Image (cartoon, rainbow, N blue to C red; front, side, top):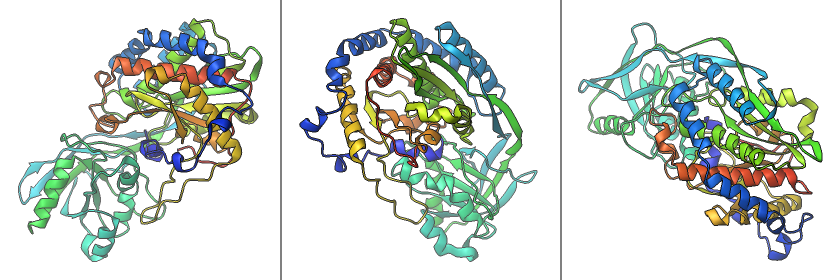
Length: 491
């Protein structure tokens, strides 16, 4: 999950926006969706809870293909295998439209504390970072807790040094700015490199990678993540008055854009085939671990949800299209390419569902644009957008759908849904949705060597399949449509 997509980790703020009475919930154009679809939902949930195929596919993707960074040799293998699996379950119109993706290469890397003591640091280069000069660079280091502390140091305190951001984890949304914008903020003051405390609540000496975003007009300097423990150690040393010196070596570099592909297949609608419910996740991952929670679980759960709809002989009125997007982690080109490929048919998309928050125990799903907006460094976040009456009514309908998931304790529908890959569609007015989970450990494993298939609990995974299957089928079959909002965010 790239940093623009952090908002799914923030607590939904829709409760203050929506005061929905029982009368409103029952007055929708579709009537009582819970009553209308109870039998079908129960069949889908039963099938999902007994399913073994989805987890088996996830394990194969993780164990046999492994991590799948854009431009790597593994991603084309994942594309080919995914298309074959879609054909195997009987999807129609399986295809792999081309996408040009950035090709960032990590290379060899290391970080060593030289003073006041020699000690290897636990580090992992940030995605899209430039490398160090051949042989690395050695410089004094200065630790700061936030951007305000960096600014107070000024050029005199930063120039020629390695800046260490030791920002305590508040939430992914509140803390990821140090990874995303920190390198350029430090470079503007003359820093030669940046080390960022990993964006995670768990201290286990495991560094977390992720994309940075160099700002135009500012120098590009090498940047890496270090473990929480190492960041805190450097902070303690500095507070004791001990001068810090670090040697950093990174061979990271960009190569020419690589050829890749989105992967898609369909269940063609029986009554309104021109209208489309699209769902999926991102097939690419970072180049560490297996990309299991982020986002192997998303692509395989959505695939199995569609497979169960097909297996049960259910044909919704609208077309269900599953898409595995590429390049979510370090570019977002798969989502943009899909919007371009869809062309004028974007207006026929009635819902866009993305699963990219891992497969922990589901709690329900989110709908619409009602999220706290991401703030720029040093600025207060903007309030969530105000709901229109149409969006309030659509949320009421989502709550009816969610009632059908109460038997698996996933009956909560709240404002705030979508994802980075469906963001281009949402900005064109397509309603965005995404499953919600308890989110207890996702950011413990996210973007690390520890993101392996054993972290995905099979029972939780099956419940996520159930949520997706019920959501997808009803949205593709119900008489009415959810409201979208042109220009809304989706990340």
